[in-house]
Image (cartoon, rainbow, N blue to C red; front, top):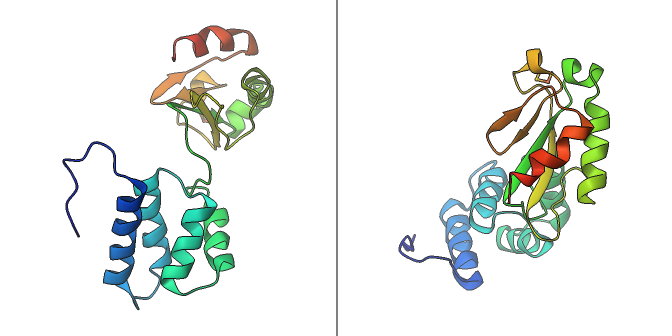
Length: 163
Ligand code: FES
């Protein structure tokens, strides 16, 4: 594969070229749709419809098969992520201490739902089952920062820390 590591940002043409080469190199291997999608997400940052169509065409498989895998695994994203990813813990300890209310407040304040990104690309919201800090429940994580004992009230000030 052509090395483009000195390039700051690849053009779309270069991105598709890299993906195409990877598909060609692995043609005929069993179960290679997931590695292809994994790489595609690495290159494009997410998997919009055009990329899914391209993968289907290059691999000579139905688009529905690609879409099926993309929607089945929560790891794959069909929207670009924001500069900051907010993960709301919906594990039991957090749930019983009001995580759902925090999630609703967050969705209200940002005007987006789980899996979406704000228009200014500042925040994305995702959820997870247990962030390993149950003693601080309810917990949210912004990028790698854990914020414990969350309340809907605290949310605004915390979000302000992330530009
Ligand atoms: S359940 Fe939320 S951190 Fe464990």
